[in-house]
Structures are given as C-alpha cells and as structure tokens.
Length: 256
Image 1 (cartoon, rainbow, N blue to C red):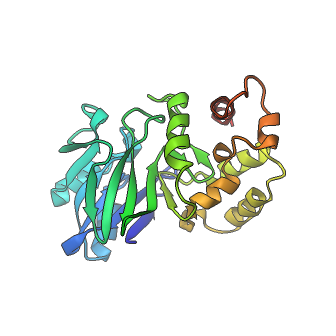
Image 2: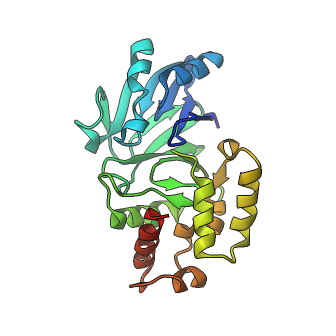
C-alpha cells in the first residue's frame, strides 16, 4: 500500500497525503503546503499529476495552486463543491474510482462535516484496506459540524459507512487530534483502559507517525461506542437511540 502520510506542522495539525500511481506519477490528497508536497514527491522521484480535495475548507486545498502551477496537476473534488474550491477540473460522486498503483480509490459520499465532503477508500485486490477520511472521522473522534455541516447527517455517515468497515482497515485522517480525542473518551468513559494506555503512548512519543485501524476505533473512539453503558449513563437529555447519544456527545465535544 503506497500511501504516504505527511504531517504539515500547520496550526490545525493537518495531514496531507501522497499516493503513488503508475509511471512515476502521484496523487496528492488535501495539500496544505505546496512546497512540502512537491519536495516530498521529488524525494521519491514522483510527479504529482492529480490532486483530490476531501472538502471545501481552505486548510484542505490551500496548497492546490502551487502544485498546479509547478506540475499542471488536475484537481478533483466532490460534486457539491462546485463554486467552493477554485480550479477544480473534475467533480466526483459516490462510487467513482481513481486509479492508483496496485489498486483504486473508491469515492465515498460522506456528508456531515460539510455536504461537499468525500472520503477515499483504498481498494486492493477487491478488499478495502484503508480509508482517507478527511474531517469526517479522526482517530478517537469525529469531525465538527460548525462550518456547513449537520451532526445528524454525520451520525448517518459514521454509522452506515464507518462502523461497518472491517477491523483491519487503516484510517488516514485529515488532522492529528488524537491526544485531545482520547482525553475526551476518558472524560466520558473513565474506565476505558485501552484509551488510557494509548493516551500514555501518544504523550510519550510522536503521534504524527502513528496509524490506527477501525479495530482500534471500536476500542477507544467514543463515537464508535454509542451503546456503552458508562458512556450513555453520563449523558443528559434524550439518549433513547444511538443517534441521540451521538448528538449529545457531539455537543459535548464542541465545548471540549
């Protein structure tokens, strides 16, 4: 699997991604720093010929122009991003595919953080092995819905498209928020030993070089633990369904 995760050192702790394609080309996902991405590609003797933006927030496309100017790369984005991201050449919809080396990226329509948000499922030999999740799903958390999103839609996306993935699928998020997210998990579920152990590891090492899979999320992501008795019992208001639990948790995380 030829996905390279690049930490950008941005104030928002963004990740950008470089994915190898055939014939020395590469695809860039959510470039924050054009120079950083171009230099990284150059170090691997690759040329970026395609950019995919997961959504329309500036920190996920601000590197587009510099890469396009240098390489002539095309820009792809969600079909609902028309007029929201400058310079897009092609708009994507659910189940479209983008070819990469040794596989394809299958487009997921993932509303919630915004309604022009896509995620990219890496398919290798017919199986999903990784997902680039943008700001929909983070390690130990989910995205906010402040700027063009809706928490009810985000619940549906997380429940139907991510809870159902196999444990082995690796997640590549748009930001490194895991330390804060694990602390939120422990605030909601103090007895979660897995979250406690991982928080200790994260604080003692470089979290930007760690990767996690869906199996990990089931253990320490509060938004995957909507039927956990400790999580539910600590909430106020309507908790009669998993959706209501999710909404209460998202409200609490907004203020965390």
